[in-house]
Image 1 (cartoon, one colour):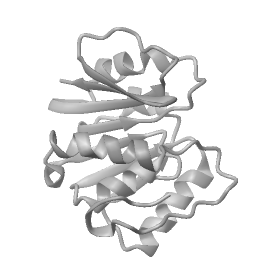
Image 2 (image 1 turned 120 degrees about the vertical axis):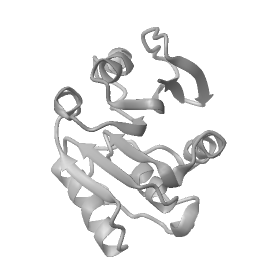
Image 3 (image 1 turned 30 degrees about the vertical axis):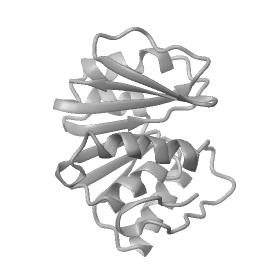
Length: 177
């Protein structure tokens, strides 16, 4: 796993093998960031990485000079790895929080310009995730939400869905506000 672009481009991340994660592949991540490059001005963004896992997306965003990245994961070892790696790399714009993502969505008062969610593919609430995020008003006007999900599993219909891209077993659904 490597950071593909920005100031830390090319740096390899080596998370512990015992983390309960399924990181976004480098190929899918590169395709995603090629799309985002044309839609977002990274240097202006406050970002949220839900189900952050290894921090793969958080580090990619930080590498592109975003204002801030809040990385949320339920597993202490994941949050600890992201925080330790950010500290070692002197990255100050990543903040980690150990939390149940669904409780966090309901309770946070922050708003974000870009939200990325890569939940475990088998969670029951996956198809409703976009609706839950929009109900909680986490996305700023003009913001973008991307949810990674298995290509074989459909998300619930939502009026803010603008595009879906498939990369093998994984798909990205894009929503705007």
